[in-house]
Length: 359
Ligand SMILES: *Cc1c(COP(=O)(O)O)cnc(C)c1O
Image 1 (cartoon, rainbow, N blue to C red):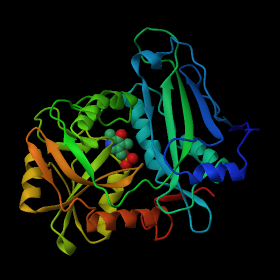
Image 2 (tube, rainbow, N blue to C red; image 1 turned 90 degrees about the horizontal axis):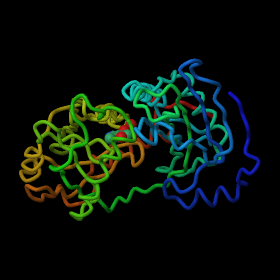
Image 3 (cartoon, rainbow, N blue to C red; image 1 turned 120 degrees about the vertical axis):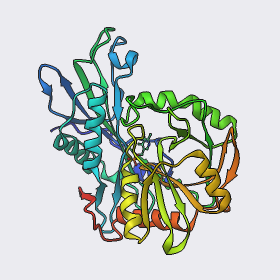
Image 4 (spheres, helix red, strand yellow; image 1 turned 90 degrees about the vertical axis):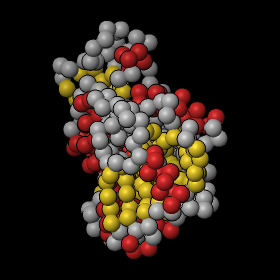
């Protein structure tokens, strides 16, 4: 891998001040990785270089037809001062699947991992120290053939950037959701399983509708029957039935339209490790409403790399409004969140082999 260091890299005091500000996506690390692909010569040598703007012809394919994919993953500070990635192989594999669906080149897992590890090692000073904080890593790929012809691009550019992520979890606040019956996120045969920018572009109007209803987030239901719960915004959902050791931890089944979250998958294991019964099922809007009103559903949370776990409180829809629990994060929600964070921060045993030490 070609290495071109940033002569203007921030000194450690400046960097520490920026990292201490917390937040998300405000500052980017000193470096980025770029790797070019073409139909004729395949993947070129990746380059680590100073973070900065890129220049593209206005007729570049991605601007017109949205041929783009991305990933989201994190590096966590470890108790020995080192840094480890959480399940980066899973991100590499999903990135390749998304590429295939968007007719972009599949990046070999080893190449993907090499770029991530090189950037994290070089910019390790940007990884925050506290539990709940991390370095958020954003790999993405754009179609870079120049021309307005509609066809799979014969050129692509892979880029990798990283931003420190503060602990924006507020334990006193559960998010409110608007269950959208007007807009859908994904249909069978569409791009719901792929992590592509287009899915997000199409979701923004629904997010706006949720905000107009006074809600924090939108909940998606299935496109066909318009009754099955799929996801919340860019996160997967979990429902808890019952309480104590007899509780069940339930998540909507992956039907082909849901994004297969790595946090979702990890929580299936963590909840089982904690002794709960776990289930992947089809859950309808009626099941949600009735479960909450009968008290059978005791807790709800959303999960994803960025926020890890986010408790869900009030749900509003064209069919009415209902509230889960007392509006505060549930006991099992917090137990699962803390167990996952403890693994990510190296504070409890990594029994599933999820952590990949880079430093
Ligand atoms: C990225 C994403 C998720 C969460 O996936 P993680 O791998 O857990 O971060 C869930 N839903 C959508 C739509 C997403 O784009």
